[in-house]
Structure formats: structure tokens, C-alpha cells
Amino acid sequence: MENLNIIVAHGHNRVIGSENDLPWAGEMREDMKRFVELTTGHTILMGRKTYDSIGRPLPNRRNIVLTSQDDLEIEGCETVNTFADVLDMEVDGDLFVIGGAKVYHLAMPHADKLYVTEIDGDFPGDTFFPELPDVWHEVYREPHGVDERNCYGYTFVEYERIT
Ligand SMILES: NC(=O)c1ccc[n+]([C@@H]2O[C@H](COP(=O)([O-])OP(=O)(O)OC[C@H]3O[C@@H](n4cnc5c(N)ncnc54)[C@H](OP(=O)(O)O)[C@@H]3O)[C@@H](O)[C@H]2O)c1
Image 1: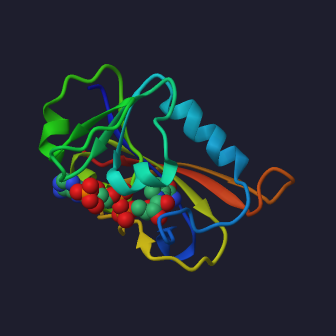
Image 2: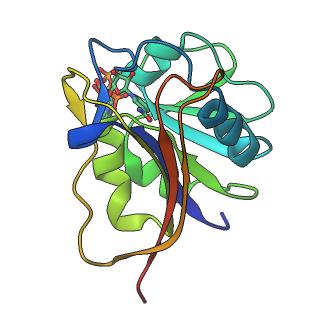
């Protein structure tokens, strides 16, 4: 593996999910576009609940699903039973951890880079992105307002680990 990256979109209070779906109603097209651009051609890792929420493997990416169920088979995906299994895998290119909260917690100590979209809204939810420990340093920030393709203002932020 080259880099282990985390990619996440969160609203105010770091909310990422509500009832196993995204908390924001309506489209965030530029966030989706950036997600596709960054992850295409690489490997993505997600928790089983996030897989259920998406409902299909994402195309043009190697899809890995973390689950405690040792008999779970998902067409178009590989399954792993521990995060350590992922770290032991041969991965071409980068690994992007795409959520949810449980997998972000496991990946954070091993991650090289964070790609965050801060969505400018208060949303009810039940799943949250962890607070960042001091080892993370902001290296990029790109704010955008609301427009016809994006229902809320949003800011792309990148963090790198201080070495
Ligand atoms: N805003 C965003 O960027 C974003 C991104 C992704 C997801 N989300 C949202 O986040 C929510 C889902 O997140 P979540 O935290 O509830 O679930 P999750 O992390 O997606 O999945 C949890 C599942 O992963 C498996 N798992 C987790 N830790 C494990 C371990 N140590 N060993 C083996 N298996 C393990 C278990 O699957 P089994 O139950 O099968 O054992 C567990 O139930 C949804 O609302 C989704 O829409 C938001």
C-alpha cells in the first residue's frame, strides 16, 4: 500500500450518519465528485453497515468490507474480519477508509492523510467522526458556498500527520 487515507464528510458537531444513511437530505454533488476522483483506481475499506447503506460495490475500485461475520459473502467485495487483516493485505496504490465511525476509529492511528468535507449545516444524527488528535496538521482548505448542485455550503480540508 502507498498511503492509508481516510475520507469523510461531516456536518456541524462532526455528525456523519443518521439511521444508517447520510444525515443531509439533498445532493452534495461536488463532494460526491471529489470522492469518486480521489478513490477511483484505488482500494476502499468500509464497515459492513456502510456497505449496507450504499447497497452495492463501488465501480472501478477494489471494495473491502470489514465484518465480524465469518460467513458473509458480498458479490464484488472482499470481506475481512479484523482491521489487522487489512494492514497485512497486498494493496496496489492507496487504501481509502470510507467509514463509518467504527472503521474510522480503527484506522485513525494508522492513517497518513485525511480528506474531510465540512458540510455547513446542523443535522440530527447518531454517528460521529472522531475528534482529531494533535498529530494532525491542516495542509489545505477550500471553502464553497451553496449552489444549484450543492444544497449546503461546504469546505474541502486535508490533514497530514505531523512526523
Ligand atoms: N458522512 C460520511 O462520510 C460517511 C461515510 C461512511 C458512513 N457514513 C454513515 O455512517 C453510518 C455507519 O457507520 P457505523 O459506525 O454505524 O458502522 P460501520 O463502521 O459502517 O460498520 C460497522 C460494522 O463494521 C463491522 N466492524 C466494525 N468494527 C469491526 C471490527 N473491529 N472487527 C470486525 N468487524 C467490525 C461490524 O460488522 P458486522 O455487524 O457485520 O459484524 C460492524 O457492525 C451510516 O449512517 C452511514 O451513512 C457516513
